[in-house]
Length: 313
Image (tube, rainbow, N blue to C red; front, side, top):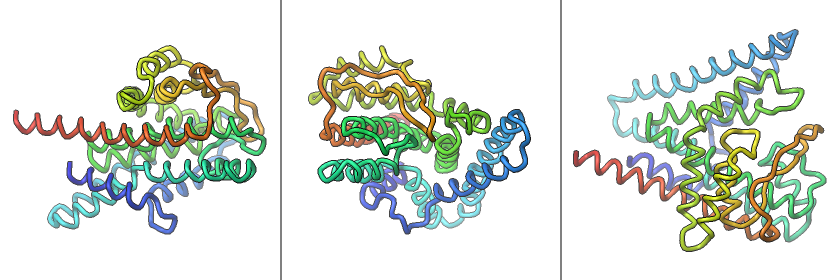
């Protein structure tokens, strides 16, 4: 429990410095290489589908075994064991990084749309070059909401269940989905199994995140509407999970999210989430960041309570 709390505090303080060694970057390089090699070797769509399955099996196995074996070797050295454990846990959490990237977009909006579009392109897969200000804000809010689950709550949940090895497995699954799991012509085959695996891993964390976000909105936002929109629009997304955190935020803020987007030159039809009670504005970026941090703190409090109850029993 202490290691997780320390890891969260480190994330709050330093985030993800670009020069700092980070396992997620290594994961990204591995997946990019596998994608390149699979496309060279696969001659048919069915072979690409099979290659996607192999990529999932190999990467999940590696993601679990590497930290597991490392921690087995470090068990006789408790201080080193905890230091490495904290490091791995810290690299799985992305709250501060999300905060920084979202605020970069917020500040860019005060200068020029082109600058804001460019900043947004770092955190979304959709094309940003023609987006209006309202669309830029909406995309940022959606990303922070979705990644409150993917980048904060889910890795912490897996860490709380199975320690750093399981948290690293989750990050590998999530990274595969973010790189390969698009429903475009290019990725629909090789990305099928990475996307389905991510759906499975996020089934519980996404719903828990929606709950935490809504509870975090108490005394500040419209929590009743947050729960209402989360439930009503829970299927208004091609992902079976993303609409829960996005729906909670849309309801809490009283705005509409989602809609059609362009990925790699291809228009992808998406339903909307929420109601258009008011026009979304750039201050909603700050509000969503606030909800993200509150949800993270609430999860830690619940985890501590569960541990204390368990110790008494």
